[in-house]
Image: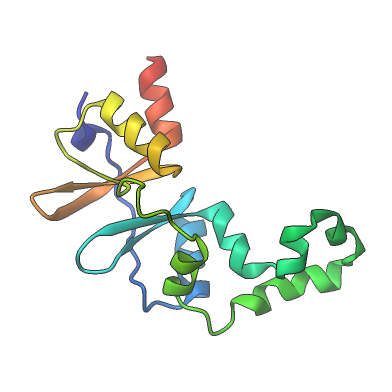
Length: 148
């Protein structure tokens, strides 16, 4: 099976989009990450990594401090995203330049897709054919295909 056959339609956001709006796109689409197109390449921001921007740094560095937050304080997490852009989410990844782009060609095999996903540490990859975005392959869909 080829990547183009596994791809599912998914929205794409741009670096200038508001972070909260982009996260609404992510949750409504039920995806494990955001696909970001900067006009030249596709990036993926895993949903779990959005928390790097949403949570105060001291809680990320010492998760046990999260116990002292009550529910009202937990509701303030979204306030940390106010005024942030998708570009802030991408920057928070601290992405290693040596990692592959989380995108594959439509002709990629399931093993190639798995290798890119594993090497890039992302739960989905963009499928791009002749410069045209086709959709995404999620880790769930890929594993389901690999298991038969």
